[in-house]
Amino acid sequence: MIRRLLLRLSDWDFRLFMRIFNLNGRRFIDHFMYWISKTGDGHLYMAIALFLLIFHPFLDEGKRIFATGAVGFVVKLSIYTVIKKKVKRNRPFQSLEDVEFLIPPPDQFSFPSGHTAGAVMSAIVLGYFYPFLQISLVIWACLVGFSRVYLGVHYPTDVVAGVLLGIISAKIGFFITT
View 1 (cartoon, rainbow, N blue to C red):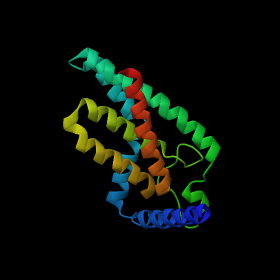
View 2: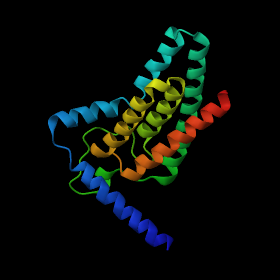
View 3: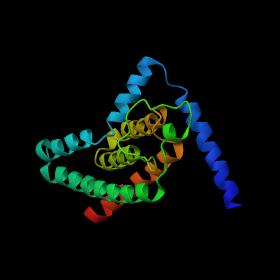
């Protein structure tokens, strides 16, 4: 039963990957997805963190946001690294014929999506402190995850695992800092 479930999940993962990946080839959208994906690289997070530490009108709240995000990122990176090394799932372009990535991947393996985990964790932390940004942050985090599949560097289940990792990391960040 479990084996059959895993086979069905694998089949779904492959079919959904191909549907999303086959959307590429439109110059404007390809560039848009590239830049959305780049916002999940980590540079944006560091810029936001520095901005909050230096310019936040209520310095103590800026420090709280920074601390929550920093703890969340340490948790995310720790869990992410262990899972990547244990699972060692090849990226789609390594496993599938006629699939080439549209953005160079940051490392060898695909499961889970670290870009998605970071985006989701950031969206939760920033959305908590800035409720008026919640919808925009959720849309952005979803686009980061979608872009990773669109660009050929992740399967949909890598992104789902990244979402779960981002949620767990944010919750632990809040638990430790509050």
